[in-house]
Image (cartoon, rainbow, N blue to C red; front, side, top):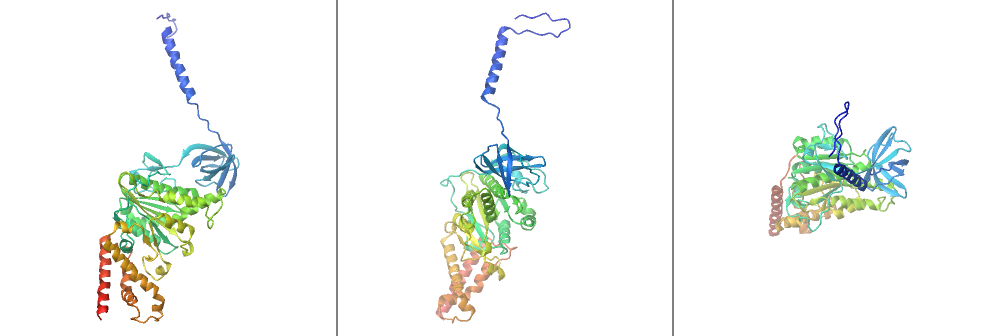
Amino acid sequence: MTATVPHRHSHHRETRGPEDNGALWAMRLERCRKRAETPISLVVEGKLTRVVGLTLEAVGCQAAIGSRCLVSGPNGSVEAEVVGFAGEKLFLMPTGDIRGIAPNARVIPTGRVCEAAVGEALLGRVLDGAGCPLDSAGPLHTELRVPLTGRFINPLTRRPIREPLDVGVRAINALLSVGRGQRMGLFAGSGVGKSVLLGMMTRYTNADVIVVGLIGERGREVKEFIENILGPEGMKRAVVVASPADNPPLMRIQGAALATSIAEYFRDRGLHVLLLMDSLTRYAQAQREIALAIGEPPATKGYPPSVFAKLPQLVERAGNGDVGGGSITAFYTVLTEGDDHNDPIADAARAILDGHVVLSRSLAEAGHYPAIDIEASISRAMNEITTSEHQQAGRRFKQLHSTYQQSRDLISVGAYTAGSDARVDEAIAMQPRLMDFLQQDQHQPVTLNDSLHDLRGLIETSRRELLVRSEA
């Protein structure tokens, strides 16, 4: 190795030999080669060309369905999700207010898809559809993020429904028994008491975590549900996702997916989760708004086909899992507009859920609470989670109730003559006790064991009275 004599006014500098220079050049070439193998990704921006309602049209850029773009103009910016494309056009749906967005605004693909922040820190918090806190408890401290689409579960690996769940409502516990991991629908028109019944099950159901999705409902109901129904004790084990009716349709859909993703996280950790979603109808209506806005033709009473594809994708994510031993027992409210139980969404929900509880307006107007129509309601998992004695008692109750309802018009006008039909005579004698059994104060829970005890006592009373009449 050779060295130069330092100049009097310069710093000492060592000259590299040929071997060192060769290694240096080899290292530089290797660095350049790696840089060439991973070219710099270029983001091609587009521009906003059209806004129709809440649908944004952009040209000049490409992005995948479900990915996000930033629409930026001189007076503001908003994030939007790609919901469709046609030729060179991208159709986007904003996640927020589009006021301030001007023509030819920049449309910048971000390459991101929507994800949910999950973790223990969510307990006791209230979030919006984007997963941002609505309460004043500070920022969320979560590290894990999962996609809102959830993960696929092989149906053959799901654990069957075998364990009954106590929901604290006597009529449901005894006659419409629910199992852990079951998905039930709560069908009712407006103002019949479905929210109050949902609140009862929230307070009294035995669950480790409660996830509440308030989707597309009135904004004032959010605070009322938290303060009056959940309360401070209930909020300690609950997560509330609120996306009221004034949110864009994309945020309402995202709110339902977020609530389900949070429930999935706790289920996969081995916990028993109660998922309450109010309502499935508003979720379907939000999807209808998006589908019609991008040009999908309406099919069934104004609902495009994509609505009926989205519903099972959301509902099938609940239930028992394949790992961890946890479960998601889900209750979805279904708003039957005009008390029409043949509404397309109600029909679709009945087909994909594991049972339904129907609330009757006539019972509610008569002061009968909860206004559960036992004849129209069913639990498809009841035979798998109850004993034969329980099932026989439930069938006997329904026979008595149905017999009275079939002869109700004759009885009310005095056209029925006692002694004409022994079955009707028995139903008339038992009717006051049947109605008392079905009613319950919303602040007084009835456990599963007490519900079965009351049902057995009622049926035993019916047998004794029948025996007395036969002897007489």
